[in-house]
Amino acid sequence: MKTRAAVYREPNVPLDIVELDICNLAPQDVLVRITHSGICHSDLHVYHGSRDWETPMILGHEGAGVVEDVGEGVTGIKSGDRVVLSLVASCGRCRSCAAGFANRCQVLPAFPIGTYYDGGHRFEKDGEVHHSFCTVGSFAEHAVVHFSKAVRVPDDVGLDVACLVGCGVPTGVGSAVNTAQVRRGSTCVVYGCGGVGLNVIQGCRLMGAAEIVAVDLLDDKLALAERFGATRTLNATDDDPVAAVMELTGGRGADYAFEVIGTGATYKNAWNSIGMGGLAVMVGGPPAGTPFHIDATEIYFGKALTGSMYGNSSPARDFPWIFDLYRSGELLLDELITQHRPLNDVTAALDELDTGGVVRTVLDIGEE
Ligand code: APR
Ligand code: ZN
Ligand code: ZN
Image (cartoon, rainbow, N blue to C red; front, top):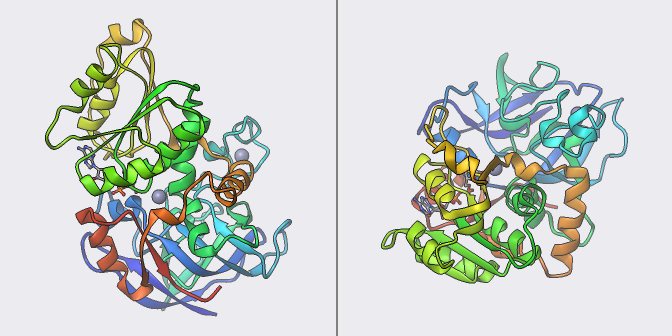
């Protein structure tokens, strides 16, 4: 069987749209006909060659579609099911999974390499192996995923918005709900109001934060941040955001700061924005080797720091309530979508994310 996919080969070279052969399904595989895929900043990191990625690689990891076929060992999901594809695969039985951290599954670590859980691959062209980013590879007409990565979408939720629940939504909302467990009435600062940061903001709102300070360099992102629940906005182009946060909190510092960009400088700003007893949650992925210096006495006096890969989300636990809150109007998803584009325009859409005018582009790849 054949499919069409957008393939990364070298940094900053337009993705190749090519026809590929789909390999035979392994027993735990699910074949999904992709209808929509979001474009996330992590796709842009790969496109810019942020590290030595396995190539050629099908990009995209925010996909949704319809199950076309399943391997003989698959349970709980069948042909015809409408699904969103999770970034993480999980066995459901290891210590991490049992503790509610499917994002750190010890048996099926699927992020962010291109090789499948059994060491294999699922796509080829003239015998050449093609990897799949996050073992999703959703910039394609088909994806093959471990069955734990395919999560059913309620009938009344469109796959065009459901695809965003593959990465940006659980990463952001989960960072506030699962990782920080934001206390009601607290003060939160969010650095970066892109596709993930806006979801951190709405996660803080859902948890009942009293103040949510949004920081970005772009006024249009800050206007959106207000729509998602920010109570104040700061443009870091003109002002020192840390000084502004200190002034806003009467010198105490915030209870929580979220870094949702992925640079050493903004890691530092987030850390410097919290007070004693505060928690800094680093959501953005910095380039490997980025230094980040902390004065040990700050830790001694009670400042805390943690990472939040995938918002510490467990798809089977978290996606259902995310969809429920969307249906009740408490969680905004449609507002994250700036534009729709066909698969052929994927490179142009990556460039648009880079220049800052876009929150999420959704690629329309197939009919629902
Ligand atoms: N200060 C404040 N805001 C900044 C700064 C800065 N120094 N630099 C960039 N920004 C803003 C951008 O203007 C943009 O609105 O950060 C936002 C980043 O948003 P996106 O590009 O949409 O990225 P997103 O998909 O949200 O991902 C952010 O999270 O998942 C991780 O590692 C991933 O690095 C990525 C990060
Ligand atoms: Zn992502
Ligand atoms: Zn596990």
